[in-house]
Amino acid sequence: MPKSTRELTTASGAHPAALQRLLRTLTCAQIVTEVQQDHFILTPLRTCLQTTVSYSVHAAALMWGDPFLWKSFGNLEQTIRTGQTAFDTQFGMSFFEYQQKYKPDFCTTYNACMNASSRHVEVAKTYTTGFANAHHVLDVGGGLGGLLHILLKQYPHLRGTLYDLPHVVADAQPFKENNNGRYALISGNIFESVPSGADIYILSHVLMDHDDEKARIILRNCRRAMSGTTTTCLLIVEIMLNNTNASSNQTGHLSDLTMLVLTGGRHRSEKEFQTLVESENFFVRACISLPTVDTIIECLPV
Image (cartoon, rainbow, N blue to C red):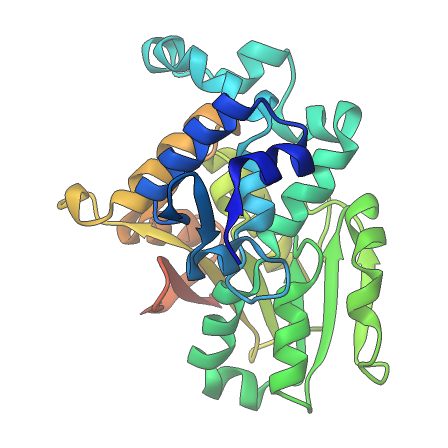
């Protein structure tokens, strides 16, 4: 049912004229429609902002609207000149250190954003043979456990282990429920160790947050966890860049620039992934493109 600016002003406490200007701008983005003079109605696009849909961008909208995030882009020029991470320059510590120390609420929002299920569904639907033949999947740095939740739902024979920092694992507890003991939570630090005993290890949107030196430490710990076995594999799920045709992957390169500004991490090309994993005794067996912007990079231990 259409709402007038006056009604929306009363409900939100906003300034009437300012709200009207915002609403008319939102019509350009097809989020609302002005059905009659000064009366607006939401379009179907509104569902993207609901938390109950698999393709929700609700958490992402909250995350990117946080000033502490976008303020870092004000130091982009210095980052381009020096190569130093803009966030570190702005706040005097790393992105992850700052949010854990000063922004616990943002930490929850960030993990919810990373937990968005649409990209997880495609991983589960695409790597079917691998998951069907596995017994135990370990999600390294798996956040709130959304990927494991989907995998265990689609593959009833699987057991899953979520491994992440203690404060993250604490928020993942609800995903453990209703899985008949098939879901384990382990807290720890991926830069120190990774638990052993799984058939498939997954690094989903983890390496992109780190430079090559730190990424090698994570891979090294995964490789140690897989030592003594011949049937394990590592799945890296990330955006893969095409450096010979950058214009074909606008999302990837914008995200890569974001990593440069916020975390000092990066997205990588297929060749860069190959070089990275080979340095830690893996080899790339296959690269599987997903309907999303991501690629599954299937790595086997040497």
